Image (tube, rainbow over all chains, first blue to last red; front, side):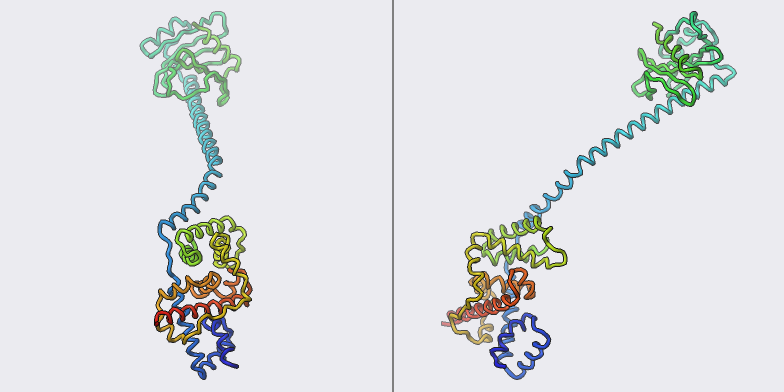
Amino acid sequence: MTCDLWLSKLDAYVDGACSQEELASLEVHFRTCSSCAAEALSRLQMKRMTQAAAARYYPSPEFRLRIERSIEPKRRPVWVFAWMPAVAVALVLLAVGLTLWAWHAAREQALAELVDLHVATLASANPVDVVSTDRHTVKPWFQGKLPFTFNLPDLQNSSFKLVGGRVMYFEHSPGAQLLFQIRNHQLSVFILQDRPDAIPLAMGATARDMAFNVETWSESGLRYVVISDASPADVHDLSDLIRGVR
Amino acid sequence: MPLFARLYNFAHWLTQDRASAEDLVQETYMKALRGFSSFQQGTNFRAWMYRIMRNTFLTTQAGLKVSASLDSDDEAVEPTVPATPESVLLARMEQKMIQDTLEKLPVKFREIILLCDLEEMSYQEIGETLGIPMGTVMSRLSRARKAMRELLAARVQGASR
C-alpha cells in the first residue's frame, strides 16, 4: 500500500473513526514510515488546536436571561389559565359548602338546646316561676327581669290555656319561656331578643326536631320559637295567636 | 437550557456576527420548543438541535448565499498554494491564526470542522446534523481540512516574506 492510501485514512485515524483492523495496520505502518507518522502527529495537533481556538464565542448573561424568559413565561400562563377557573370554582363551592354546613350545624345546635330547655321544664317539679292562666299577671311578672317586653294573646275563645312563665337564658342572654297547654300537651314559647350575632333558627320556617314540632319567626326585634310534642297544627295555631297580638 | 453556550458559539461561527448569532440561537430554541413533539425519543438530541440551527441559518439572508454551494461536494477544491510541511506550520501557528483561517473557510467547510473537532461529533452524528450520508461527511471533512491547511500555509508564507 502506498503512502497516499495511508494518508487518506489519517482523518478517520485522528477522529477515532477507524476500525480496530485499520488502527492496527496504521500503527504498524507508522513504525516504518516516519513521514506518515509525522503527518499523523501534525493532524492530531491541528485537531487539538482547532478545538481550542474554535471555542471562541460566549453568550452574554443578558442574552441567556432573555432566552430563558422568552421560553419560560409562555409555559406558566398556559398552566395557570387552564386551571384557574377550575380552582376558583372549587374554592367557591368549598366556601359555600362550609358556610352552609356551619350554618346548618349551628341552627341544629340552637334548636336542640331549646328543645332541651322545653323538656327540662316539663320534667321539673316547678316548671314555671309565675303560675297563672291570666296574661295580665304573667306579663307584668317579667318587668325588670328582661331587657324587652312582649304581648300575650287573649285565649278565652281558644283551646289553649296559659300555664305560666319563667326567665331562661339562651346564648348568654335572658329570655322569656311561656308555658301553654292544649289537651294533655304542653307547649313552650320562647321569646328572645333578636341580635345580629344570634344563631339563626330558620326564621319563618317550621321544622320537626327530635320528634318535637317547632315553629319559629322573627318580629319587631324579637325571635319567637314554639316547641311542643303537640301536632304541627296545634303548634301553628298557637303561633298564629301570638303573631296576631298587637 | 441544554447546549446553550455551544449552540451560541456555533451560531457565531456561522453568522460571524454577534446580533445575528443571538437571533439565530433564539429562533433555534423557539423552533425546537414548537417542534419538540417531532423529536423522536432515543435519537440524537444534540444532532437534532444543531440540524435545526443549521437549517434556520440557511433560510437567513447570509445563509441563502452559502446554501447554493452546499450540494457541490463533487467539485474538488484544488489547492491554490503548495502545502508546506505541517510540522513547520504548526510550530509557527497561533490560536488567532487558526481563528482567522476558520473565518475565511467557506461555511460548508467551517461547519463540518466545528462539528467534528470542536463538538467531537461522530461521522454519523455529523451526517444526521447536515443531512448527508457518511461517505459525504468523510470526503467533505477531508477537503475542509485540506483547504484549512492550505490557507494556513499561505498565511505563514505571507508572514515570512
